[in-house]
Image 1 (cartoon, one colour):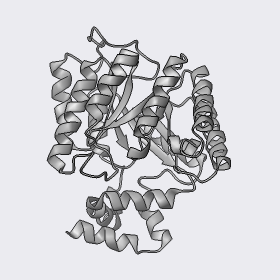
Image 2 (cartoon, helix red, strand yellow):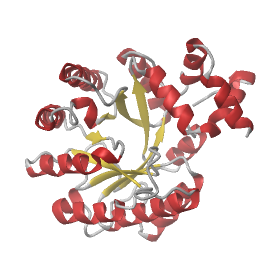
Image 3 (cartoon, helix red, strand yellow):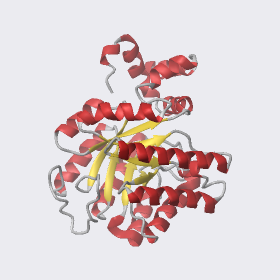
Image 4 (cartoon, rainbow, N blue to C red):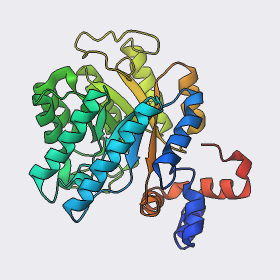
Length: 322
């Protein structure tokens, strides 16, 4: 209750205060800010995925902005020799405005990324575009662009079928980020209790690994991380080992031995550093952009338990290490 109260108060605070809170979770408004954060965190053994903030748009001119900005990001990764890939929102590329043009924009970026052996992750948005997002990945693989994958949400009822269907089409070339899911979907299509969401997320991780896919475990939930560590042990998978799965796909540049752990900037830093020290590949999600305020407000609304972290950062700023 205290945490929720702190979040409710923060949402009513001036913009400068929200920026002070969000600086832990958002690199900043510019690409230079994102590069600075990555340079700092790479000394801890982390790799990265970069997200330009902003999603559903109202015109194709905005889609062109995102395409151009991601090309800038790609060149920054190459120029600074960063261990990083790209995370994009399909709706930011125009998928809901003009499906064909949105697909062309995404394909253009994925092709350019392929020239640099760079991976592109299609973030999963709400249920309106779940089918379309997965289909974009399948269509690009059919065109020979295998440096692209998507996100699956444990909370959705459809996720096991999606894993099976993708496996039938592109087999072990599948590459997922599996998370609980942040969108509050209707009970008709999603699990809503914490225990069910956790259980189904664990099941999705197991299912994807058993299908031979590459799996990014995107969770800050300690039970999910512990479940995954036990599962990796069961499957004889782990750091500094070759992927033992007979059905596993080829090892990709910038990837781990069939899996990696992924976390948001500023969240569970100690756990991430512990996993890295144990030899696991850990990837930090680096958001930046002019839409930092909208992103920060959405994160606060989605995760009211963050209130105690806000209070701790304010009262004991020396502990505010991401």
